[in-house]
Length: 281
Image (cartoon, rainbow, N blue to C red; front, side):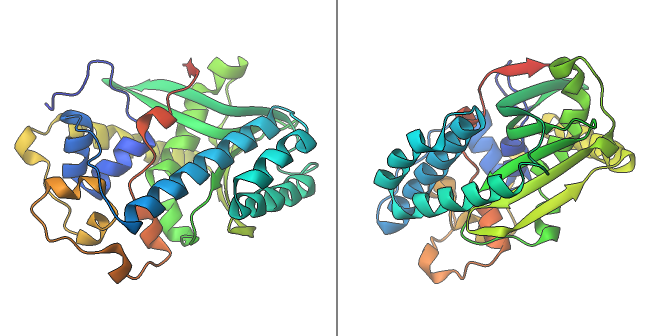
């Protein structure tokens, strides 16, 4: 069994890291190594885009809490033209869905947890909407430059963990259980604002996801230090800051063509981005 912290909780970030590259998971969560420093334009660009993403999520959180747009807009305008463009696109989407997917009670930047076997699962949601008719919508705001294909999105841990955990933990949030068929997950892309991706949930998918998450966490817990092998797809190394710990040739990011699925190979947001205000099941 890997030497994980006693309070370790499995999230979409660490589970996806394991599936992308077991060695990355080992270095990041078992050995708990700091992100190595990198230099050059690539590092600056990655840090800048991460900062923009965090700023955007913070702004949407404030909007969901009811802070008027006129109070937020001057802050956005001073930050960057790209952030301002995202903000305007979000405003149009928000207005168009006031009586649709956004109608209902809003739970912004909320974290749910639930046990599964010997572990706990956690998910931090950008926005949950409890509709008057009993349905639920999970919104996730994406600022990636490329929109991944529907198949690539559905294959991600996030698309399986988030609906599953909402069904498991909703009673702890509202006092009332919900069925898988009442849940829909919506990815909204700031750079592709008119093409959100919707994933409807079902009882069959819920059962499949529970089995998937159970097997995945058991596999991780059953490994020894030497069992966390390097990924067989070295493209994932291109944007991984942990690559300096691995004996693989360095490939400059600018020499690798980025496609829709390539965005999903980047390192996920830091874990502390997910550690806010948990509600337990």
